[in-house]
Length: 324
Image (cartoon, rainbow, N blue to C red):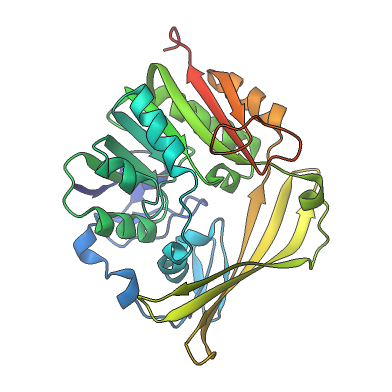
């Protein structure tokens, strides 16, 4: 596998040897540094104490992270894979078999989708703003000649290939873009990197009325997972901080607790981050403006019909064969 690299674009602008903070999760990197799997310790070897706040590129003591997306933080990124989710993998593997062997994953994170695609023999390029998540993905991949990881901003990336058969935006990662202009820019970059007739599979959150109406302070213990290889149980409790219905942006506070086998909390991390929901026909309009033709909207990863109570909202949209 090729080392993680940084293309020209908003996610990899360097000035005087230091990378500029782009506001969507990229952290400052000293020098002209290229990430590689050998530079990052495995997640289970990383220290658990949580000692920094990351907000607009500034750090100070504390257990609270305020960021554009949680995985810009190294300690939170190390916990990501503790919660296993594979429901969507058969869909993406099937789509790759149907469309062709060249796959681009936007916001690939720690490689949850990318790694199975690479192991199935597809040529995969993954981009993500978080160097910590990319380091995890690279460690999983090992030596994989058909895979490339690139640190880049999903709003403005430019790769040396523009003939991908399939592009994927999984697990509602599009919601990290809180401005409509940034959403459109992302989709325009995706269409520019697909071959004529190439397909985009994008997983939006379906904003059910009860979710939108949740009051500030509403809480749910949404995830609890035993992690036997690391010797702890991980709990995540999600709280609504605020909801701006006019902008369709919610501020979410997630509290992560690392609990040892005696029941003691050995570490706690709290993150606040904005999340923009997108309605069904708003999403169709964005895709059409970017140069896609919507082929299907599914309510689940088994290609179930989309309905008012669907838990998911998965679009398949094809680049026009005549669009440059």
